[in-house]
Image (cartoon, rainbow, N blue to C red; front, side):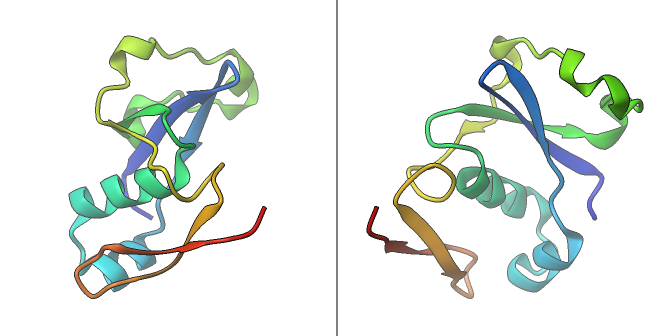
Length: 107
């Protein structure tokens, strides 16, 4: 697991993605920055802005997670792609260059 997290807001709730270190190492040869952007583009719903933060910057107590807030103006690292979460286009693999292989699926 990396020490970075991907944060976005969906339906008024703060969502936190925890990228798996094994995936970053296997697909992106350890290039954390590039991997985080690719993971966010795939896993953050299409069109929603996100921010990549240090895990240490998030509250430790997850018990009150539903009370967490994020200022939308701070979500400036990118937006969810038009594939992956919430779309009919899914990532079925990754190229050696770390680019997603996309496939359209029937809805």
